[in-house]
Image (cartoon, rainbow, N blue to C red; front, side, top):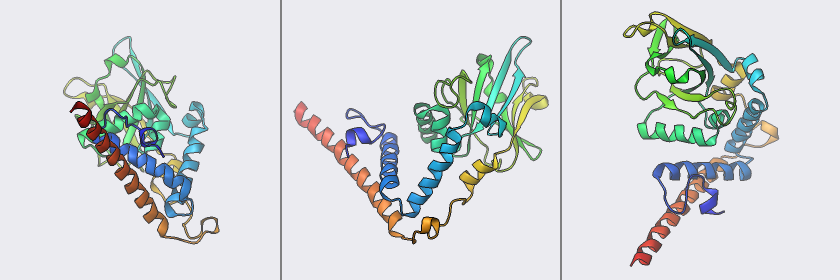
Length: 268
C-alpha cells in the first residue's frame, strides 16, 4: 500500500482537507471491497457495482429509450436553440460514469466548499450554450415551481468525458430543491417569459426515475446479508472496514506530518 500513489487526489507536494478526506474514503472503500466480501459492506458494494455496470454497458440511445436520459429544447432568440439532456446524478460513481472522474471530483469539491447538500441532476447542453441564463432554470412538482437559487447550479465540465462525451458541449449540475421528491415524477423547466416573470411561459420535460435506478438508489433491493449466497451474517465486517478507514487516515496524516518535518529540517 503506497500512500503517495494509492490515495487519490493527494500529491507529495500539497494536500487539502477535502482531498485528504476524499482520497482516504476511496482508498478504504477499495480495500474493503476486495477483502471484506463476506461483510454487509462487501455485499452492498457488490450489488452496487453490478447495478452500475448494467448502466455503463448501455449506450446513449438505450439510456434514452428507457428514460434514464430525457431531452428537451428551448428557443433563446429568433435564430438560436438551446438543447438539454437531463439525467439523475445523485450518486458518486454514477456521476463519475456520466461526466468523468475529474469533472465529478470538481463538482464534489465545490459542493463541499459551499456546504451544499441535496440530490443532483446533470444537465448536458448543446447549441447556444453561451445564451444560457441560470435564473431561468427550475424544477416543478405538484403544481409548484422551484426556481434555481444562487449556488444551486454548478459547472460540471464541457462534456469531454463519460457518457456525456460527444452529446454535449457544456454541463452543469443542479442541486435539487429539498421540497422536490426525486422518486416521484418532476419537471425540469427553462422559463421563456419576460424578465421578472421568467416562468410565465416555459419549455420543460418530465423526468421519472427508471424503476431500476430508483431501486438501486433508494431501495433495499439486494439480498439480506444473512441469506445472500448462503453466507452467515457476521457483524465483524463493518467494524473491520471502519478500522481500515481509520488506519488509512492515520497513515496519511503521518505522511503529511513527515513531509512537513522533513521540509523544516531541510530549510534549517
